[in-house]
Amino acid sequence: MYGHIENKKKEKTMKKFLMITLLSIGLPATSFAACTSTGIITNCYDYNSGNQYSTTRYGDNYSTTQGSNSRTGSSWNQTTQRIGNSVFTNGSDKNGNSWNSTTTTYGNTTITNGTDSSGKSFGRTCTGTGLSRVCTGY
Image (cartoon, rainbow, N blue to C red; front, side, top):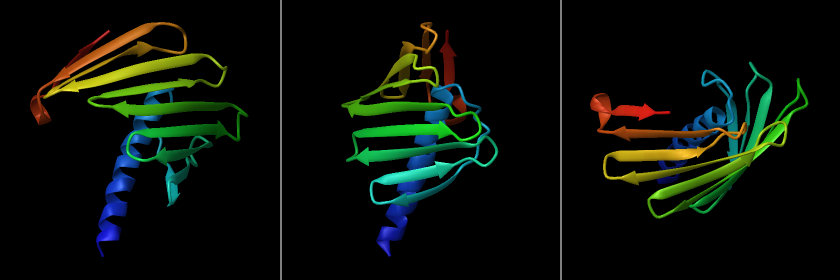
């Protein structure tokens, strides 16, 4: 009974994680993927884009994602590690260019900084909660 609830929570968390992953590697946020999970591995396929990816979670603090596109032949990867109130993510895009981001949360403030796969720095700060949440970035 409770296992079903826990699996739904993990599924919701994984969908958020995958959406962040897609955004961080430059894929459209409108992608909708069909996912299946077995143990620590979640496999997803987006019929619209042809993207498929597999995420392996090692406990609550570390995961790896390998992705590819059967239509284009491209592939990408990322690793994510949570330490305290910070999340460190890095990966490689379809051309092998590396990127990274660090997100740190202090109360109702979230700060994200990193370097995209073109070598450009980016940053974003969000404060507040719910509808009153405000984000600024460069």
